Length: 408
Image 1 (cartoon, rainbow, N blue to C red):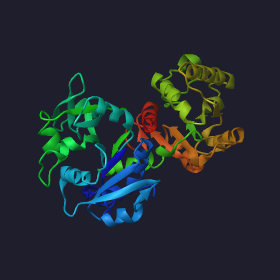
Image 2: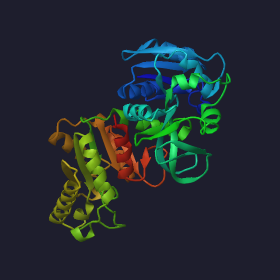
Image 3: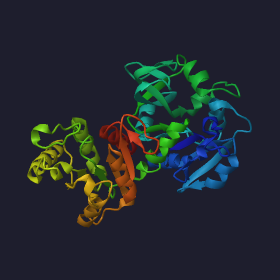
Image 4: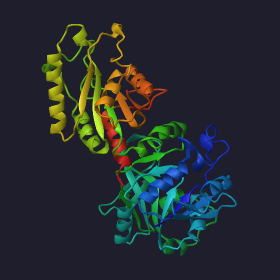
């Protein structure tokens, strides 16, 4: 497959981050965003790229040259800003395929492109847009489909509880598009999709894959972890999980002292089942000073943990081992988080564990400090975004993000 990438954006909203570079060259963990995008498209079957470039284009040429991972790269240069539509028409002059993929240069989409392509051909579509269902948003307009997934209408941006959005990956029937007369400068979204939806066969392909638009600072920051780290997770990685507040309901100012007090989150059990095939090992590390206070015994805790393991298995997941620290906080034990004694013990038990290829998921700052000290990547479960740590609202949300990145 052949793909055009619209990589000529100015990156106006990211000026404080990439003031002297094109937006597509903004660095994610030391690599240009465009490199991650090319990687994702190659994994989806693309083997030839046409990069539509303009602003600071020499930086893109110098970095990628004419080949990337054995895939040919050619350049369609915008001598002046042409808008997304003008840039696509300009780049299509260099295309050798009848049906060509087009991707926005500021979004990463992990999509089953081969299925989208087959859907496009089956429906004899003029353009097939990748769409994704989103919830509680106002940043994007929505798309209405008929029962056959033909696009009926594009809706303006407004607060929406749930809807399908355009994620910026298209497949065009090149001949149908080039047969038309277009202005030199125009917006593909506004002047074609929205204004001419009734004149062309536009179809929507629904994807459940990963999508992130780095166009605003908060999502660019999110990309550092999700794209910079999570994309590289493979079956050699280890997942460390806190217990209370992550897998089961936390008891305020108390401890889960017996089975009757254990309330597991079904969504967390489902998440562990989804995460199990993605990681080499999954272990739980939990502080349990209720034992040190004499409020419960290790036998009580063993019963609780046996139930946790049983329910995880019942949902289809697997926990390799549970580590606990019974010491009181005032003892300042090396085993108790934020110290990393439990991580060290896990590595002794499972020598394949590498802390720089490990994720720590927890709902307290001591969990994050534990991850920091061990050199892990942290995921903080909290309803409010933390300034320092990558934050999600639940283990389920983390699992959905990881799973969506692994759809190829």
